[in-house]
Image (cartoon, rainbow, N blue to C red; front, top):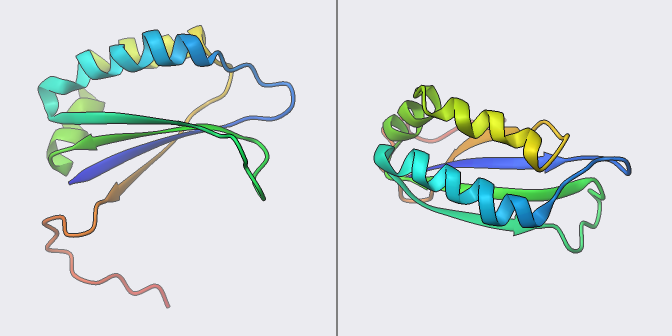
Amino acid sequence: MSILVVTYVGDGTSRFDRKTYDTHHIPLVQRTWEPFGLQRADVLHAVDVGDYPDVVAMTLCYFADRSGLDRALAAPQSAAVADDIASFTDISPMKTVVEAPGADDDAGPVDTA
């Protein structure tokens, strides 16, 4: 399973409309990416940010596999997802792809040393 982690990190002047994000943007993401294997999207709004006070929100988009995630991001329909960002924030999202533990991955262990 491949997960696209979308993180919004702002500052004291950043605009982020949670209601629009939750009720409009996330349903748009789901409709657009489900044909490519999106299984679910979990939205997390920062409450107690500890050492990272500028983290506003994170969304985890779960795909059946990396191929589907890559196809979703490259699809022409994804332009609507990108264009919609301005409707709820002035923050540029950071995107990270991660693999869930136990996912089919032939890459083997990662050497972090």
